[in-house]
Each structure stands twice: as structure tokens, then as C-alpha cells.
Length: 441
Image (cartoon, rainbow, N blue to C red):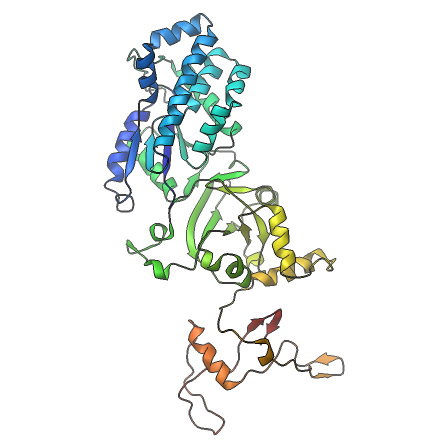
């Protein structure tokens, strides 16, 4: 499991530190999170200001004097310290009460100088910060007019309009960095914590109008943590055939979990049992319009910084508005498709998609059969009809060897052998098979 990094952002006096403290306390009581130890990254800005012997009054004087150079110098030192703090805890789970983007938003909002803020944004140092935040769960606390900003002599004391303007600047720079963020609009502390917990467990919510594209989703739970039965984790040896499953519920809500998938030849060839999360299944709700679906699938989807692109679907997935994504470049995906069949000769687009879809047809891997143990027999054809289309013959002994692999097979009440005697080792009389491009019964 990769570390869970939770970053709380927002204007001064919106309750960031209080929220982090309460989250740490609540997580220790949560059945699903109490085994996860979180570090607390706090007071980064205060540490820098104390070191520089600078107070909130100094910062406000810089603003009044329009001394952007001195103000930026302080904020850049805060960004540097934030990077050091993140790097120190990069292998641990942590909660942080700021991100470093806060410093950028201060410059943008109070000096209304986007050009200066952008020059810092483009710097190699800030790009490092963006990479550090890429896999984090970022939350922005929306200011509440009822909460008055407190003066502790260490911060700029904003009014409500300043808090709103600063928050909009913060959102702007997160969007500029292609980082997803989630807005905490509720004043109630318990509801704020519940909102954060839901996102840790893969339930993402964006404010209107709709989710940002390309999608950027931080999801760090492993299969044992994601799958519970009566609050008991499924044993790892039973958890090997689960795939990450994205549900686009509507234009504001997405759910990610692990679900058992129907194995198919392509997935098992390139990522057996989906152990490396190379494949993801994505499902779109019936009420979502085609234009919205196209926007998502034509763009990359990022999960923990890893890029996924559309690769294909089975016939059953097409009916259910679902498909597969693959963690690789578009060129790599095209190579995978070409390596598994000659589809370029098929000019009809829907027919070509259907043929590629056969690669994703569900199947249960069974035994290995040598090529010289297979005989190709002619079809029975009369009057323009093919009576044996998709039909073949299997020996009784081979059929018996396949039975142990069929988890869902229910034995018939009676089965008779060639001597018309009741068969002890019962097995089906027909199988649907996939074998070296053959598909049939």
C-alpha cells in the first residue's frame, strides 16, 4: 500500500489545525483506520516566521507598502520548508495543515500579481512540490462568515472577503497544477471529518458544475483494506482476483473500490490476477450523457499519478456502459492490441471493436493442452447452412480434468457413462471454450 497523504488547505482562521488534530484523534478510533499510523506535519509557516523573526504585522506592512519582493522572499522560504517536511515524511502516512500552495495564493491574492506567482509556480522548486502533492488527498476549507479571524501576531488577519478571495486563488493554482481538491463546505467538525474519511475510502465528491477532467484520483487502500465482510478483512489468498473498479455515479460523485472481476485472457496475460493494478474497470451511470463520457475516456485518468487510458470492452461491458482502462501510453495500448490479433483489416468500426472485445471475454483458465493434441475437423454444411458453427468435440477424460477448475459448476443429479452406468465422477457434457483464437462449444 502506498502512503496516505492528507493535506488541509485554506485561508487563515478557517480551522485547519483544529481539523487535523481532530482527524488524528478520530482516526485512532475508526475500525478501518486505527491500524494506520499518521504523522502530523504542522506549523511549517510558523517555524519559518519564528526563524526569520517576522510577525504577521511585518507581512501586512509588506502588503501595505506593496513590497512584493520581501513578501515573496518569505513565502518562498515557507515553500522550501514545506518541501523538506513532505520529503521527510514521504514514506509515512501524514496529515498536514498546509501544502505550500498557500504561500502562492497569498502572493496572488494580496498583490494581485499573477505574473509573479506564475514565475514561482514554474520554478523547479515548486514543480517538486507539485509532484509531492500529486498523490495526496487535498481538502480546501471553505470560509464561513460566522467565524472571525483570530490575531495571534504570526499571521495576516483577513476579513471574510479576503478569505473568500484567497480561497479562490488557492483553487486556481491547484487547478493549474492539475491537482484534484475537495471542498469542505460544512461548518460542523464531525461532518468535516466524515467527509475526509469517505474520500480516504474512495468516495469522491466535487462541487458543481462537474468533476474536473482529466480525472486525478488519489486512492491508496489495498485490497485487504478495501474489502471487508462483516468488518473482517478478506484473507489475502482469497483476494487475488480483485480489480480496481471506478463508478462514475454522476457529474459530482465517483466511487473507487476493489471488485472481483471475470478473468479474461488479455488481463491475465499482461497482469495476472491484477496484482499490479495495470487494469482498471470503469462504469458509467445510465443517466450520464455520451458527451460527458467521451470527455472522460478521451482524456487520461490519473490514479496515484499513474496514467490510465481506454483499452477496450467485452460485449457484456458495452451493454452495461463499462470498459477497461490500462496503465500505459496510447502507443503501448495499440501495440498490445496488435500483438493479440490482426484487426487492421476489419474496416467496419463496430465489427472491429466487437472482435477486439473478444480479448476481454470472460473465461476461467484451466489446463494447458499441447498443440499436437488438437485436431481440426471440418464443419458439417448443407444447403448453405453450417450446422456445426462454433461446435467441437472433447474427450471424456479431458473433460474430467477441466471440472476442478469450474468453481460455479453444479453437478447434475445423474450422469451415465458409455456403458449406460451411473458415472461416479460427474462432469458437464458441454463447455464454452477459448483456445488459440477459437471460440465456441
